[in-house]
Length: 293
Ligand SMILES: [Mg+2]
Image 1 (cartoon, protein in one colour):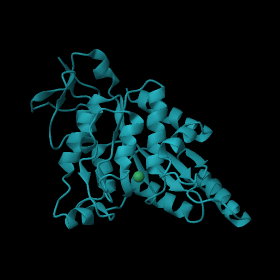
Image 2 (cartoon, protein in one colour; image 1 turned 60 degrees about the vertical axis):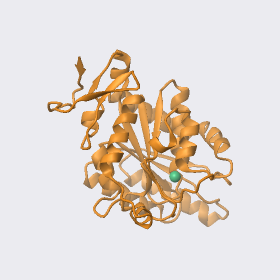
Image 3 (cartoon, rainbow, N blue to C red; image 1 turned 60 degrees about the horizontal axis):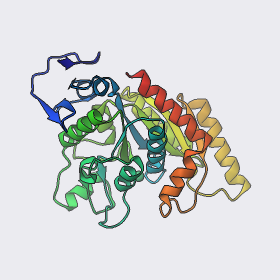
């Protein structure tokens, strides 16, 4: 029997394929959440009803803490009993044998999905995906990302997708991260910096998402540098207060600064999971996931 959810509005024309012997997924290069999130033929009723959606984690900039926030969410939601999947559609600056975002996420989420699967595109050059791909004479194919997204979504209760840089980072010659988010039809978490410039960057990102009618779950403010002066403290407080006034979405944070996060990532995730603001974010994400069922 084909189990379809309320967002299915069309006839499935292509064959469904058995996936890992547990559930079936419709494979199509143009598939989107409305299709792949619910177009499941299952031997397991639980599997069909538990498929919810993906949440896309983007940033107001690069190195704002997307991976940390994604990893903490994966850990916390897993502890609450959810089967959490992770995905990093594109990662640049990947050096064999060195830590990577996708590697960290798969380890924290304890998924059995292979690294190459959750991260279909990895490039060595630490530049924007379009240029990193060009340097290797490769092309990022959005249908490939969509296919992986659909498969991972079908395999897990909830899929956390970490973006790359900010929303206007070019992926292909014609598409940026914002275009990808729009295609995935996933709600978004925005991670930004608390501190000088934080209001502008956050509002630019939130407005870009709103212009495409993309649902925004929350803005998470992260303290990416230590606060050493009274002026810096004032700037942080100001950013937080102004964004609480004007963001128009729940503002979480600020998450406290942690020195050497990259070197002691798993420890940082563990500590951050106990943070009250991250607990608040976990509840919000959980409510959103439940609401979509
Ligand atoms: Mg990252």
